[in-house]
Length: 133
Ligand code: THU
Image 1 (cartoon, rainbow, N blue to C red):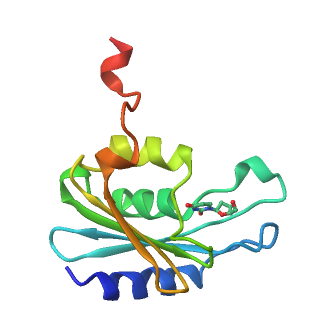
Image 2 (cartoon, rainbow, N blue to C red):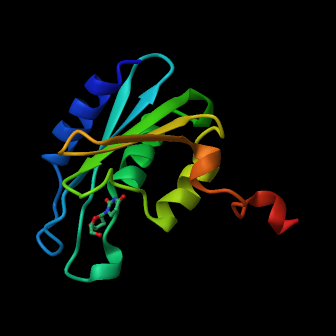
């Protein structure tokens, strides 16, 4: 897996962002085992709580193209943030359910700073379906 290429793809995805309110554009790409890649960008709304993050859009995009948890290898994201852009709490919860525990999350920013963690590290003690039993 070429991390730099993935970050470049996330940057391309960011071009698709609709973020007139925050003016904070985020791009993401989800890499699958077969090499396919699914893009995501944040899409905002005048009704602010309806904004959707880049990471969740990338995962939903992949799933709507027939991919499932076991296909997912790595999610890369980028924004023009001072430190590598970190997924929000809601995205962490969704990532934790829909991606394998050992999948890689690559966070990046425009300065070239990169941070990598596993899904497990991103949200320890996640609420999950077993809690519902
Ligand atoms: N956002 C993302 O898309 N991903 C993140 O990891 C952090 C935040 C979006 C949500 C909103 O559209 C804008 O960035 C500002 O919070």
